[in-house]
Image (cartoon, rainbow, N blue to C red; front, side):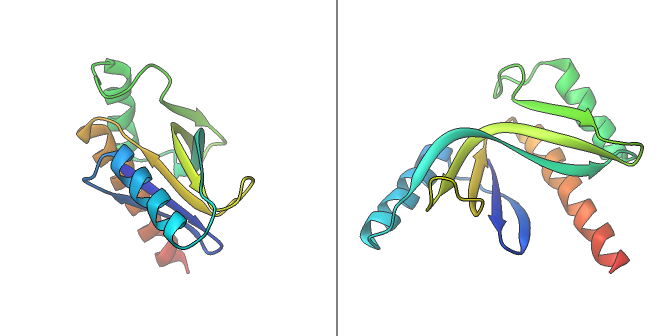
Length: 133
């Protein structure tokens, strides 16, 4: 599963071996024990990636093949933004302390190959960003 942490400082993505329902249940239980609210809903998450990446082309091929038994059609979409970037949109589960919060955790489960490629793309983008800083 992919876990996207949206914070005031930005986005951090990681691969997690636990199933979504286990992570959601643990998060809700922790929130209850702390006396905090936890809002959980089906949602979409989007992030930008460089358009010229061999990994992106591999991801597009995997998604085009449609043999991904982990996902239904439309669970991952890739749309051009401009000549340099594409937007990747995923369906998944959003968890946040506040109903309309922009800080929280987004969880999505795909095939191991799709998750690997999405995570690899994100890591490559982070390396490029840190080199430009």
